[in-house]
Length: 99
Image (tube, rainbow, N blue to C red; front, side):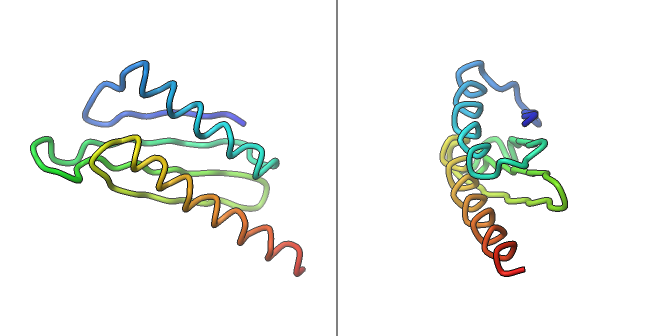
């Protein structure tokens, strides 16, 4: 799976990029057919709380899943996104089993 990390309106630290890569690598085990994952981190309004938005766009054969969450820290928003994406992956697997 190809993982691309985009930082909008700020420069992502090496530590943040490594955290993202470590956490999203687990998604590949859940959705083995995934071809690419786009991680976008965006700083919305610099001086306010809840100003960090993370979105995940997962592509695979015949399916595309997108989730987006906002939080005080990029790490928290990323973990929320991963949880939401895991739920979507499980739901998608159930649909496929029913067919």
